[in-house]
Image (cartoon, rainbow, N blue to C red; front, side, top):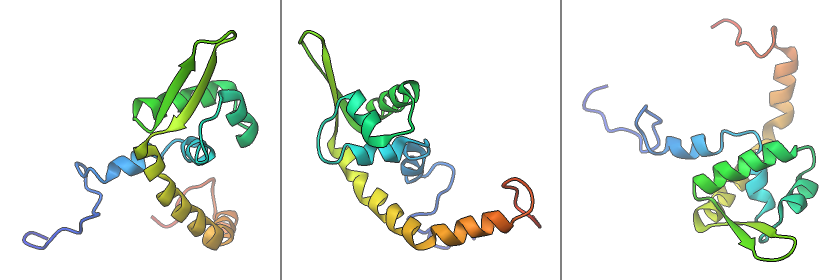
Length: 128
């Protein structure tokens, strides 16, 4: 309502806080960031550590993270060429919210999945 103070985390259309949600919206984004928490890795090491991610999807995810400034790509002039990806300070800053999301998942995953299983339709909201 007009005149009421706005919650600092109200996700209105032009709120910068929505950036964090946008950055993490990719299926593999959080997984890739989390996998880089202990230091730089080569793409093959990342794929091995993550499991289930295709080369193409990993490459797209890394490019998006690099574009957003969350990872840095380092290319070494070796034969054969070596490439590594490492978290930047903003990328390291995403580890805390990812850890919180992990705690939420540990606490509520069974409940959410159980509700999904009992829900009519394919992911549709009923009664709305």
